Length: 247
Image (tube, rainbow, N blue to C red):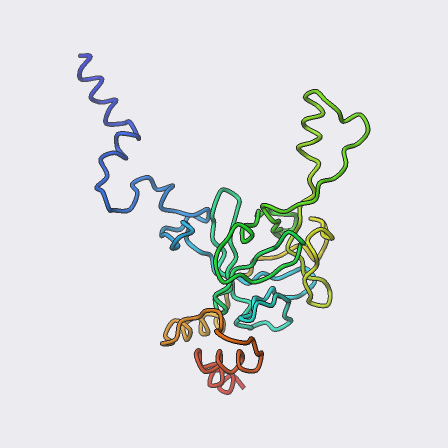
């Protein structure tokens, strides 16, 4: 009777069931195959399936990542540089990549936003759901150390105060479409609130043309010239034809 009971317990053991997975195949544990949004698949070196979204700021600008490394906001409803791939890299931590620029959103130790050609630790942002459905994106590794209040010395209570003495630096686009320095931002500022918008039909059409293009998206080689950047993008994804047919 006891051997039978042990056999049944071994069948229900999740560790042993994972051990029976064939080597070289996808993980058996569904939590290892899905991102925070519940979709299957693996996103290259980051380990999560990307969500394609447009980050619409409460200041009425869409976040943009340009090929020349510039970060700003756009009032255009259908701008290719506003299409992002948001990928989970850890619990509550995401990487934001411009689909058409091929660059990652990043924040340096001065609080400045920039577009990185490769993924690094400054590309990690803590994603939090704010009120009214807006999200905030705070730098995972850069923040401001605030002075402790009087009486915040030792003991357990003092340790708790020290743990909460950091003020986060947020991705922020002001009312003129320009990024704000991280140390000047707060989670309650309109400029720090973003609504992840799903792609519309025109956005999907631009993505399809990019996917069918023989030249993959990525940072430009050589001097960053906006005129050449814009012309190169239109040639690669056929935006000239698309815009003329839309009129």
